Image 1 (cartoon, one colour):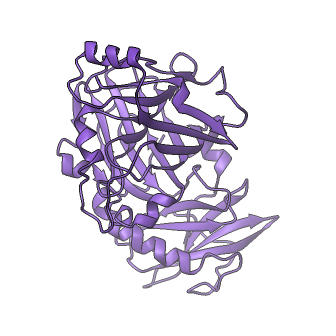
Image 2 (cartoon, one colour; image 1 turned 60 degrees about the horizontal axis):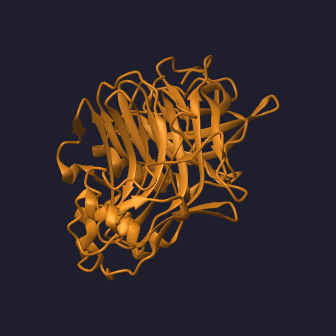
Length: 385
């Protein structure tokens, strides 16, 4: 599988700029920034069209990369309708020959191509055609309907375990996972049960407060080697705990797609390979900082995804790339983990939160992370992705 376009973290500002450009023209029948191209356009053999499977019900993302980079070159994204190509939206290439499109109404099963307009003596050029099914095969789809977790997909993890590293004062319990109206609610709450408090003290808890956590996983039931993991999630605003969605393997490899430490601290994304963490610098682990300093961001659901193979890991938030880590990864099976935890080192933030954003205040327990769905996709065997 090829993870393309290769937009590094340093290109995030470019991605945002391209995103804003695309949003201007994201209607069903836009007015292109250049004349509509003819149906018969030569294909740029070095070009690539990548369709993001982690779309919402109302919108999706398509990325294009061309072999010749001309910054500002107009590009039209087209959808095949019967035997004709229909314009969907427009954008402009960045300095690396890349552009990302927001497609309102969702991607669907249609076939797409991107066409770079004639410019500076160069003729129009198209990417190869592509569809979602060409590149990805849907695998796991957990909507959290019903009253209980899917027994063939999810288990409660580390129930009543107070010996986990850095969490002697808290342990997960099934009671802190609730399914309601298609939402999985994972909660951190105060612990008052005397037996569980005694277990915490015996495990080495030296704090004055004790907590109940929530953790579910697909361990022993479902795993995936490479592809895309995505979730629609609303994180808790309060500090002093962290909500996470991640991939764990038994081969000393872990992909922490997203960890939320609350409003005022923000989000991190890291990987662990052979006992080492990447990025090694904690400051580089924080992502999406500008958006998460807005208190309103925390009151909404967001789509977070990670796309990975054996050479790199790419995290996107609401379609915008937030982290790219290029690192040789073991070819191994990963199971999924969704958790809402209170770690011992985070307790002080319950009453003394980090105030790196306007409006940060201590938040009372319980605090809940809401998960609408969790989905995965595997690379299509016959795709060009």
